[in-house]
Image 1 (cartoon, rainbow, N blue to C red):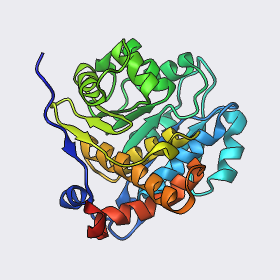
Image 2 (cartoon, helix red, strand yellow; image 1 turned 90 degrees about the vertical axis):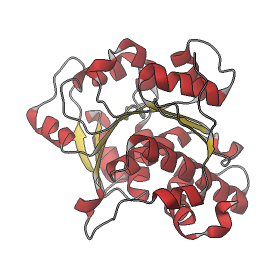
Image 3 (tube, helix red, strand yellow; image 1 turned 90 degrees about the horizontal axis):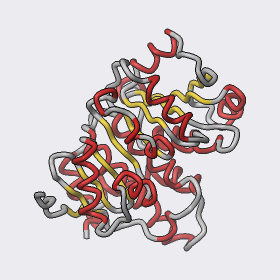
Length: 286
């Protein structure tokens, strides 16, 4: 087996060199993200992901969630359009299908409450024209049970360490090397903590973040950031690198001000400043 490429350290200078798509002059020019998730157990996960997508510059966000909690999402995230998910075993309707296909990036997973529910959602998406799919949480756990050919060509996996080990089939030994292997196996861009890998063999290392990122909802925030950048039009590997670095940088900014104990909702609100750090602050390049 060939070795992965030497990892590239992600810096603001690299991100500035890549740049971001022109935001244009309206929300319609910055892309639409669809978030599929949330449940009675974890309503906030879909809210955090949706707000994170907006905070990194996506123009519009829609959330598809359990009908029982849809009104909670509407109140918590008034900027989003909210769709009520069909009950288990029921198909999606034509209006929802059209809304999903009109989205520039679709995220499945944050706050879904069991593996079977996540697998059903991935199967519901089979045959839809989706520009970029991001999978998170339980949707990561069932990826091996869904044929790769039924998923969109552009696929981003946002995995925590335990989920990455499920995908790998063994404990993580070398994060960068193992994430690169998962990426090749799944033919998908994979983000796990400080590593991002592409099927081409390219690997990026993020030297930022720290222990404060280990807080409930942090992964949902990261998933939303990745999705927001993909919705803006970045290709999957750059969307993942941008999202992962900005999530980590938001954690560093909060650590500098607050120490340990900040919340995922704090991370979400820090994302716009993290994006600015990449674009406008040469002093952060080191």
